[in-house]
Amino acid sequence: MGRVRAEVEVAALASVVEELWYDTSRWPTFVDGLAHVAKVEGDWPRDGRVVWDARPGGRGRVIERVVAYEARAGQTVAVEDERITGTQRLAFTPTDRGCRVRLELDYAVKDRRPLMAVVDLLFVRRPMGDALRRTLVRLRREVDAADLVL
Image (tube, rainbow, N blue to C red; front, side, top):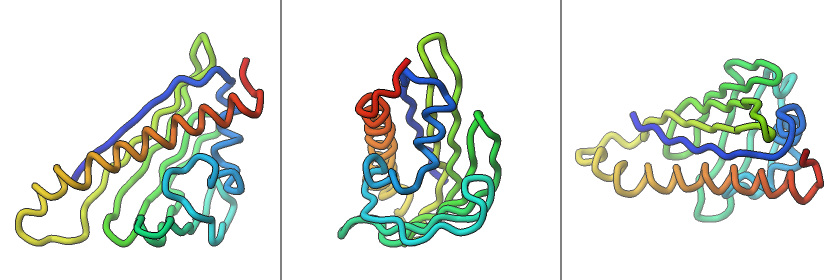
């Protein structure tokens, strides 16, 4: 199983950043590789799932099902796409200058052929970590652009 993580400091209250993050209509502006949200089911973000489609050449259809949620603290979702299954954890931590947003993904590659550990290390883990970082940097830009900073 692989693990990737990223974090970013945002100059806004955790509650403001959290509201933006859970607004799935805004996801195309910051979630890396997302083309469109196909459906939101249940009491998102507390319960339920989001199904979204990646851009061509990307992850295909992605399903995120809520496993745990705590207001102002974060969310854990079970994630599945064409290539991986995993658990993604999101955390909002207040700081003196706003909040820290941390995103972590523990995943397993579905393809179990020999040498997949090497393929994972060289061709899966790094791009996934880069995608998490791009997502968080874009989230911070969205907060800045919406003039939601402290």
